[in-house]
Structures are given as C-alpha cells and as structure tokens.
Image 1: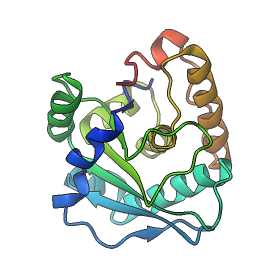
Image 2: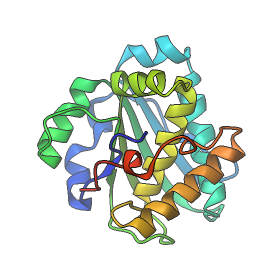
Image 3: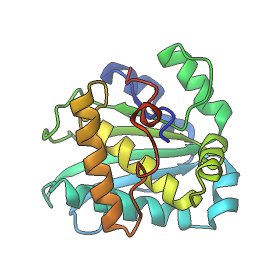
Image 4: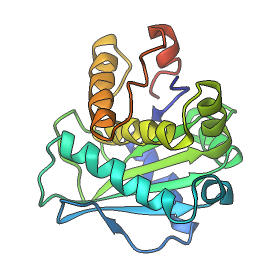
Length: 206
C-alpha cells in the first residue's frame, strides 16, 4: 500500500529543500544520461544499517535511471533530483509544516515547478523526503523486502516530480501503470497485485 506519497505545491519546494543542511556528497549521474543527476543525503543511519553501506545510493541511482528510461527522457536532459533518507520525525515535521498533517508518511515529493506529464523539468527537478520507520513498517506488513518497497516509492515520487498525480482516477491508473512497468524492468513484481483500489492511495496529493 502507498500510504501517502504526496506532492506539495511547487512554491513550497525551495523552502523545504532537504539538501541544504544534509551534508550531501556531489551529484551522482544516472546511467545513460549525460547530465541527469541525483544528490543523495542519508540523515537517518537506519537506512545504511538496514540496506548496507552504499546500497542506498546504488539503489536510488538504479531505480531513478530505470524510471527516466521508461519515460524516455532525453539523454541530454540536464536536471538534478535531491533524495533525502530521513526518519519519521523529520518527515512528520515537514508534513505538518507544508501540508498541515501532523503525522509521518512514507514519502513527500517537492517538485520545483508545476509540470504536466510529458513536460521536462528545469535544472532542479525537485526533492524527495523519505521516512525510514514508516517505509520499514509498511514493507514488513506487506511482506515485501525493504529494497523493493523503497524502489516503488522512489518511482512514485519521481513521477510526482514530473507532473504525474493520483488525485483523479484516470491519473491514479496512469501512475500505477507507469510504476508497474518501471518496477518490472527492475525485476520487481506488481506492488498493487494484492491491494484493493481503496487501499492504494488513501491520501490525495496536496
């Protein structure tokens, strides 16, 4: 189940950009793309403890590259994605400040611009903020590996940054189709196979 990967309004993104104080290393290039990069910040040690040193960065690059290839983004696209691996407390604080919901959720998406599906992002695509405890708890409840569930959330959040949403049924179905295809290319099964429509996206995009 996707508990609540959500998209904030574009003008919220810069103010909450998690990479400002996270002490990240330089951008990591996505394979197959000249200038499409991701900055990974690991603020909660539990991520490395659960997945292994460097595996968080490796998985993130692999998943986002697969999503970009599926969407047929231009190989010469120059844009940067920021992904911060945090804990429930950090995500709850951001969720409270920008969405008025005082509880953690699995992932928050902060696009830098209001795009429509098919639009290309500018130099900064936006930020993703992910909560360890919530993601780990969901993976265990759904009997999925943490890596597979995280991969799904990364794809879902990336689609939000590029203008996709699940507010309306048509948009939700289109997002699910895209997610399933990207995950299949990564050797991950359909994450919606055993969930009812009511369970898939209980929180609408902000």
